[in-house]
Length: 144
Image (cartoon, rainbow, N blue to C red):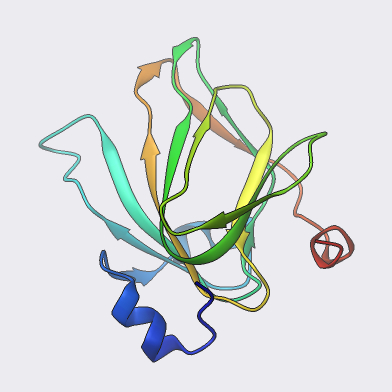
């Protein structure tokens, strides 16, 4: 379901928006919010609810790992996009799950007319790192 109205979206966003994602703002077009769901001092599995305002998306990026690794997205509220390099964009809605293998260049974010949230799961692995790449251009994004 699309949510243009923030108040309506917040009712549907059961895991909460959290705080402005200032630490990673340079890797996003638009505003995003981060609500960590696990405590890194208590578990090695990091989960966070990431919220994107309408039109917000992250840059192309790659989750590197020598073994294991990657990312899982569990869509929880609103509608968004996921795209792997060289593939068509996939429309996302509440309840969708995306499994992103390591070494796959991709991006994800909100549709231009809806708020969007997903739980991001960082899959544990050996020698993991994230590489942030170029932004998704307005031309690419607006063609969706």
